[in-house]
Length: 132
Image (tube, rainbow, N blue to C red):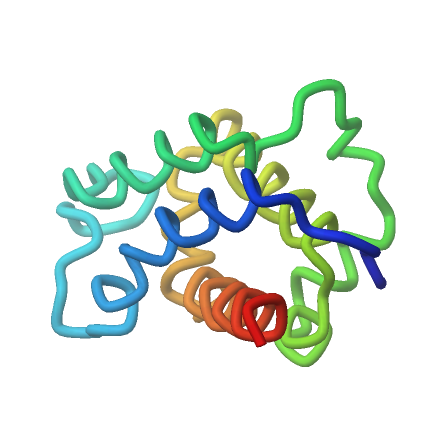
């Protein structure tokens, strides 16, 4: 899981994405409204975050996410996310976003289970490593 070089464009994208770190790190925030994830509506911030992932090209086009076997293991184990390279992070986020399109509330479960926050923490580590 080692990507060689991160471009300046990717570093800029990571910085923009990390503006949501404090939001997802604050468990007092309301991430969705409704009684269940599948019957709820995401907050404005969650929708904006999801849109930003697409805009910053962290949702990959032409990626066959339903057949990504490694992702089925990685997405369930925080310790794999904690060491993931940038390409793996993008694949995970693509899978999370696309999955939500077909299974309403899926992205919310990734928030609730801590996977989104873990990805943001990993992005912080990646950017700190690149800057230093």
